[in-house]
Image 1 (cartoon, rainbow, N blue to C red):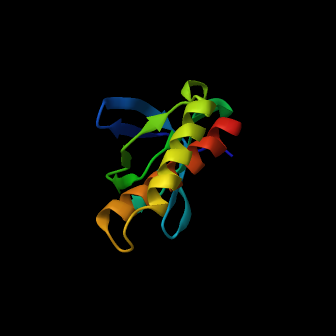
Image 2 (tube, one colour; image 1 turned 90 degrees about the vertical axis):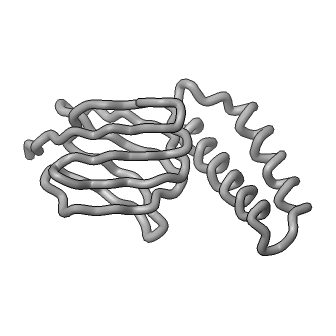
Length: 136
């Protein structure tokens, strides 16, 4: 079944990671997995760390390790604003494992209910998701 393409832009604080047309975007929010096709209803969602999949014309799929952020769908286009987005080939497994260990150790030593603790919890979720993407 042919799908209509629509524009998607993926932005991080470092700049534009992807800007092109896709037939479907799939990601994860705090409520669960989400797929977006052309002419989707307007949407604003908070994104969780996961694998971002951009389905291009001809069956090609571009994937990214996506950190937390936001998704906006409006006027038949999507904007993904995330803290980090990396292609799987750019991920260094040993570096991610080291960062995950650091975040877990820091989490254990942090005060319950503190903003610092919430930051370490986000880091743990991010590095666990990035490792899943790195493993393919």
